[in-house]
Structures are given as structure tokens and as C-alpha cells.
Image 1 (cartoon, rainbow, N blue to C red):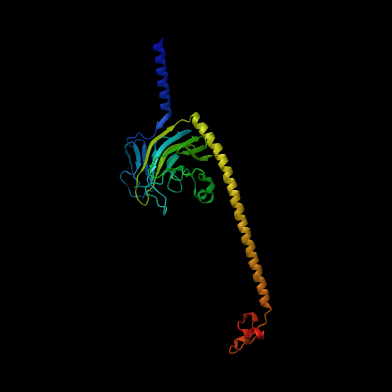
Image 2: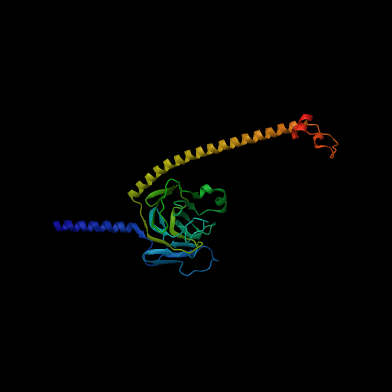
Length: 315
């Protein structure tokens, strides 16, 4: 009986382990680029040998070619986790070293109409947490910024780690709701998403100087109860943040309105004074014929223009 109980516990444990493993998909095997395809940013871009390599259990962008590395499988309703270490920077003149640190979710190998990127949702790691809908047309790009750019609020201070350190990214795609965590802190939540299914891809940029960007432990799994709780908590936090942002925006709008009102009042006073001066000078008598050889004190101008004592006495 004791043996049967132990055997049953072992079987239950193995089944649970197998189920957990079945729920997870490792996109990178740690050894090679099996399942991945690199797409250069443009067709006329010079061909580069091995823009991406696998080494020491890491997927590495060498920072020598712009484009995106995309995985072959599509996913829907999932949790994506990965670690990234970038050697890039956006300081100074804004030119990156190597990669800017972005990933694409719900992606298609087909390139979008603009920006030479895949039809996908881009999540910035160096943002951190800014979300971009890349599957848009030119009109939306220039005239409807609110439909494709979703900037992360400013409240997560120093959420991204120093250059050269590992950052942990977690993304929950639940229906049309996207929740982004960086280093265990929620940084953005977007709803509705314009794409709910697709592949995972990684952005590569050739910066001013080539430097590698490292990725590891890229895993996609099913949504669990703990993820739903984290998503709900993120919704509550974002509700508070949105109120704070709205209050801050209202105060900023009031300040700008006050400054504009004061500026308009000052301009009106200046115009009024100019009109008064013009009216005063209209009534000043000026001789038709002026002898330019005459003494300056005898010229027919108002006395206030004279500077000498003698001129003041003549007035």
C-alpha cells in the first residue's frame, strides 16, 4: 500500500511537470538559430555575414545590420518572458550604439507600409515600455498619433537597469489587452491592441558604432491565474496613474492658459499705448518748409526734444 501511494505521488508529480512543460515554449534553444529568420530592413542594404549568432546560451545581435529576427511560430493569448542586456545608449546626439532595444509581438514577416518594419506591435525596452502599433498607413502615422503611439507613463522611475546589466521583460497578451512589465514593475498597459496573434521578433539597428545586444530565456507560455491577478493589479495602478496624469495635465493647461491671457493683455496694453502716442503726435504742428541751415533750437519740433537749457527757456 505504501509503495502504491508513493508510486502514485511520483506519477502525479511527473504528470504535473509534463503539463507545466507543455504549457511553455522555449523560442530559443540556446545553441543555434533554428526556427529564426533574419529580415534586413531594406532590400538594397549591404549583405552582412552572421548579423545574429548563438553563443554561450545567448541569442546575440552583433549590431552590424538593421532589420528584425523573427520566429517561425504564431501565438495568441500568452505570456512572454525574456531577458535582454544591451550595450546601446541614446545619450548625446541620439545615435545608438548597436541596437536600441525593442521587440515585436504578434508580428508578421510582411513589412508594414511605413518604417520598413514588420506588421507588429513594438515594445521598447530602452523606452522603457513605450508601445507602437506598426501595422498602420501613412495617414494614421502623420495625422492620428494617438492611434499608434502609446507612451509609458513617467511613474516607473529607474525601472530599466544600467547599460550592460540584464533586464527582464514580461508581456501579457490577453485578448485585446496588452500589459508590459519590466524588471517586475508594470510600465504600460494598452487596450485594445490592433493585433492579437502573431510571431515574436527582435529588432536590430545598426547604430553609429556596432555593439552586441544579448537575449536569453525567451519563453512563451499559457496565461496562469497569477498572471490574471498581476494584470488586474496593473489595471488598478494604471487607473490611479491616469487620474494623476489627468490632474497634472489640467494644471498644466491652466498654467498655459493663464500665461496666454497675460500675454494677450500685455499686447493689448502695448497696442493701446501706441494708439495714444500716435494720436498725440498727430496734433504736433510741423512747418511745411524747414530751413536746414537754421539753429537747431529754432526747428519746429516739440520742446521735449530740446536738451539745452536755452532751448527750455525758449519753450
